[in-house]
Image (cartoon, rainbow, N blue to C red):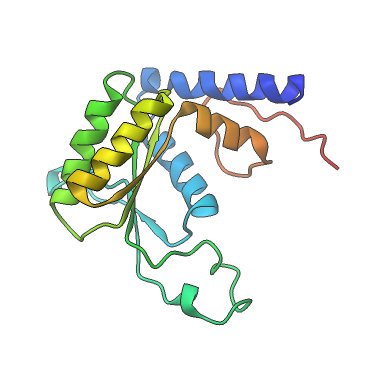
Length: 180
């Protein structure tokens, strides 16, 4: 990894770490939704509506039905990342007790609304590999759901590794690409 790439990753990690200071949870949700649509599944809808109408039930975005993945190969650019699974995206800029926050959100996501197959969880805080694996196992046992956790390290690495046209967190400037 070049020095420029290392510096960019560090700047992204720093920008993610200060999102809470400016109450930028909506910006973080938009960044995560863009990344999830591009890298995980394209058929995602953001949660909408005021908290007074019931909130988002822990679901910052969720997949909508699509038959596109079953269509003949090569007939749609949208098809390759589309999923037939029920996928929920959850995001947090909370800096402490991330395992507790993930458990609470999983209980909300899986305890009401449409049944879910997978939860993609984004957090601005680093989650050690052992803790991540324990949470994944717990989600499978307790809620019969697949859990993926994208922490600060994974987000920074993914955002650094490609030239992105998606919005960046405040204070996270892009470094010009030198790739051919």
